[in-house]
Image: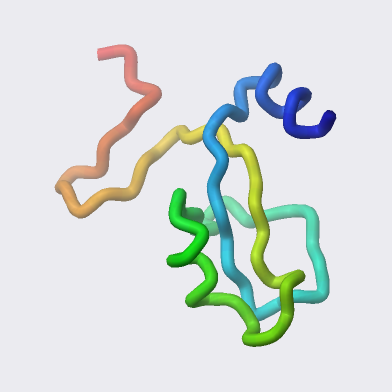
Length: 77
C-alpha cells in the first residue's frame, strides 16, 4: 500500500541504502547514497542487523555517475 502511494507520487525507482545505523530512521539526508543493487548496499550495513538495510522508492533528480559533469536527469534541455 505504501509502495503504491509512493509510485503515484512519482517515486518510481526502487533503491537500497545500507547503513551502520540500524536502529531505524525514516528521513534520509540530501546527500544520502542509494543503489539499485541490494547486494552492494549490504556492504555498508551493520553485520548481522537486518534493520540496517533500507529499501525505498526514490524520485531521482541528480544521478551521480563517473561522467563529468554529472547527468542532470531533470533538465529540460
